[in-house]
Length: 418
Ligand code: HEM
Image (cartoon, rainbow, N blue to C red):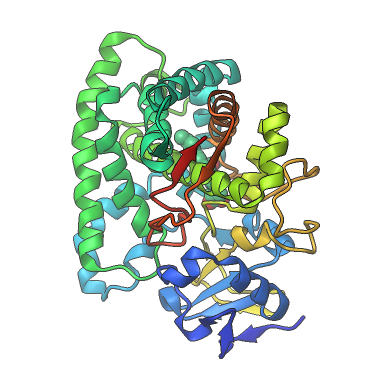
């Protein structure tokens, strides 16, 4: 198996030596770069985080996501670039994040996940659909009669935030603060080049949110509603129960996981539809394809481009000599465009069958919020097409890209209605 360590030169306009997750040229369109890497360096060693292995192929990404030689305990990765004496400043935040379900390994993860799956049982498909239909209708109603709107500001940002408010029992008037806290925290896990100020901003945001959650927790205990938060407080699964600190940590995880990806996939998907006009026309004629279109959005331009792991032992995989402690990144954004797995991978096809993309990961950590996202995309597409049958993206649109590749998407999408 051919493995290239530290390749030099240029890949699709990106100097390999400059490869990083905050390179705006890469962020805008990473797919030519991925195709180059799939063809020439499907396994790549990068110096970021003190040494990182990147895997681009579908089969490698899928298999590594379930590989028990890799650990999910990676809370400290964002502070790795700091000298050890500077890391202590961020210990309060990092040790809190160590409590995230996503950062647990088997066997502890199994009991924890079982418990969280029970907590999530209140969000049945009919409940999620009813909630989402109500919120989407509320957001689209004021847009009627307007010629142009920014879909990100008016819909894609508020929708997932309002859903998380409802799911956790947070007053919906607070949704903008949730977005600010979430963005600050998400940025540190989605970047390879951070400043100390960005880490400080994430830590301040974390503890402002924790303080805010104290009030919400008191309300949850008093009002008797079935929310993720009230259930997390009251439920026990085979003797497994969460402490207040652990509950706060999960609320932070659910907030940033719930807001970031869902928002960007709405924008990425609508832009992709606009660029594939025949698919847009097909969906307009056959709105029953909305669920299948949602899956294709997630494959075609997934907001989560890579998933990180840390090697728990030294081992060789596909010729890569992975050392204990090194970061390993299965690149799901590239895997979802791997021609060895998907036919015509760079084409959006809302009727694609056997679309087993890796947008939600694979294995024990498979995204617990996937149904929330699937329902959001389906309901939004259904209502968007029934309310505004004809729309397109403004030609000269400045999309205002997010500044990290970890959450791939943009902050502005001007839509013109006809
Ligand atoms: C488009 C939107 C989303 C995408 C692309 C996405 C993607 C992912 C991926 C790739 C993983 C696996 C991480 C790993 O293997 O380490 C994951 C895990 C997770 N996601 Fe999502 N997610 C999205 C939305 C959500 C939502 C809406 C929620 C809940 C409110 C959520 C909650 C979680 C949690 C709690 C985990 C950790 C599960 C575990 O470790 O057992 N995600 N997500």
